[in-house]
Image (cartoon, rainbow, N blue to C red; front, side, top):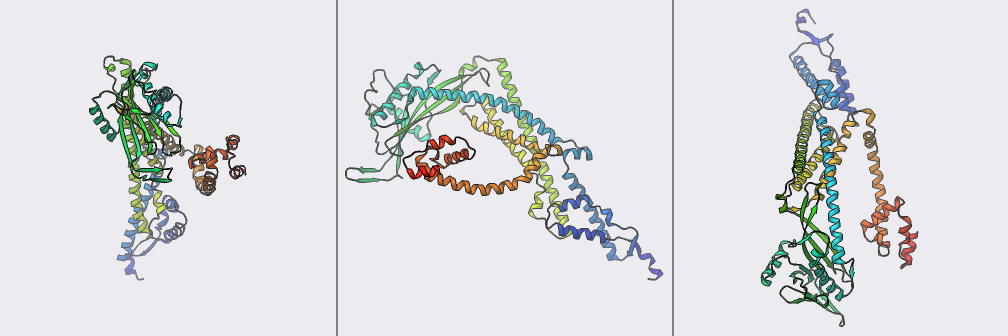
Length: 540
């Protein structure tokens, strides 16, 4: 090259080392989904520049140099963003002095949510105990500890006796009870209201509803039997109020209605009979949300003849509905009102903190997806490849989803708790509130493991779960095949002769107990010996 071309010499950029690294990364990225992260965080662009060599300056060379320089700048920027994105809060604070707001929010939230759960749990236990005691009273007085009925006379006697005992319940029971309209569904309420109008009866009646087959024709002497199980009917009747002059117990062949007529049960078509009774009670609770809570109680006594096996089983169920206590307006306790206001304030603070936590976690998730899209464009432009599905999931933090779910459950449970404390009328959703608050608190405590994992001394559990979980899942898949085989076999063979194998759920519980070595003697001892084949099979 002659001396006139000396003016075209510029510093040369050597990309041999850079190309070698790209080739190595492209080969390794096929087998490892984290190589791109290691490469983008550790590779230095300075290693790709050689300022002591030069090339001949041409328009194409200048364009390639400018393009490579912009690409290196983009690479350096993305590398910094990735490195910062995958830092823990302590590293971010040391790098940019960024305060760990999400960590602080989680610490405050876990303290308040746990305190809220303890307060609610104590009150919930007291309420459940109050309801269980009332159910025991109703079963003792109304059913008198009888369970199964075998004759028609016993069915009539039991229905009339329940009506009699219910009429005197207010005076005979040591509890505080009054009478109210039982809670019925819309169709039953409409039928009952029409009968009350015809009978000119108002107040708090007792109601029975009968489910039966509408088309049934049986002549067992002539050995003819026909019915259509798809055609069923439901008929509701208002019972005649109990009167001291009535002698219903002596007449055990019919049921007296409010219109003066009597009802005879069609036992051949009779499927189920439900008897509805309404009560009003008050719960004294000076240490709860309120000093007294009033409830409307609907008692449902069910006589089940679905199987037509000659035995009519009976069951008592209750439903408590919160109602307004007028006496509370006459007497107000300043300390009680302050306690209620403090609990409501704490619930509102928890809801606000959970909303803030959702916003912070959602922002982090959106930032991760925005960085993923930017890196995908760079990866496509640099290597002419697309990120696979597993590589994309690296930018999604599952801990944030867990925290968001826990916040949603906590907000739902807190709202239900506020509704209960405000004494809004309706069904007592203590079970729904307990479920939301309990699962939400569980997820909050589990979410704290994410922050404990940032320290190597406390990261043993997380690392163990990550390593062992895939192997445990494979083992569970294989073990479940054996378990299901024994489950269905035991249910079919031993179910008719053993109480612990009557249903698949009960069979699963029994097998799980036997695997752990619990209650083995009683399980074998209670096996019926009616079938020698089944007994020998159970012993083997």
